[in-house]
Image (cartoon, rainbow, N blue to C red; front, side):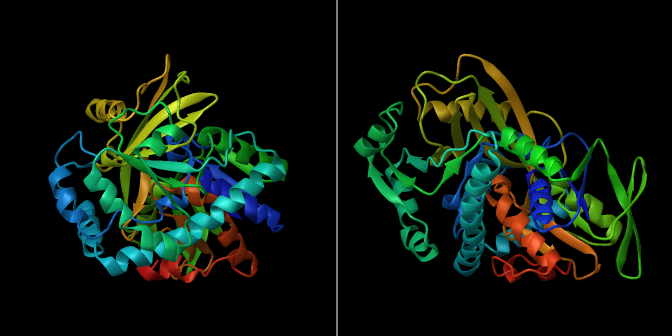
Length: 411
């Protein structure tokens, strides 16, 4: 079994395949977890079941799209793939598609949340995991009222939420500014340190007999008779009885060699990590108006998020990093630690319907997809690995697989 991609999704697939008794070899172009698995905020978030494509978001997106410091930025350079993706996304900004995607995301998020805690306990994964809950904060009464209108959706999805007024919110997190008017607490959320989690998964995969080969760049595929015959790498042709594509944002580029168009766009995100300040939130925070995530661990303090569609343009965007710092300072009395440890950027694989692509290919008999998790790769990782392993081993799927099936895109 050949797994392409050594991020959190590829390693989770490898782990669950090994648990099913299937030998695994993982190919990673860089080092384990070097992509978006590294610098995200490490939150485990059933609270993020609702997709971005809520009704009315198109108007807000148009206001933001060309502002480099806005939570959503679209580079104006003409890119036909991006135009097609944005058009498909816009068609899904309606109540029916929004709730359907939320239901499908919620099932995978809640399953993964349980599984990750079990994995941490079973294998003693050293990743600063905490069943902390998560808190969404508001500075504007209008935004708070708008978010609270989602309560019936949370109830239908089975996601627990507690409403907090301004005083209750500051009692929960004393380091907040007085401008915060209220919050929504999600007790089933959690957090971990993502780079440590991925490293711990890799150690466990190796301990169970899995092979992980780093520095192996996948260049393309050899195909024939409706099957993947081999994977071409910079070091030569790799044979595989079965191939799992867990390449994240790189998936569309490699899929072209298979004659397939995968409806993903790289959504660029940023984070900054400091040493832990004295005044620090005890739970992960979402600063709703500014679309910023805040996570604190014993080993550090991170601000992150934002969404930038600039294709595969590399490098830090100083304007967007500065916007993250300004936004956090509107909510927190102390919005940075004493020592800056890392400034990071990475691409998330944003699927056009905001539901990951998981399952067997309809075009190649020995190909399985595990990609398109957007900003929720960590949160959906274990559930994805479990589902992939069940489908390949012939076991009973833990979740109905149809909502995630590649067949919906002819893949």
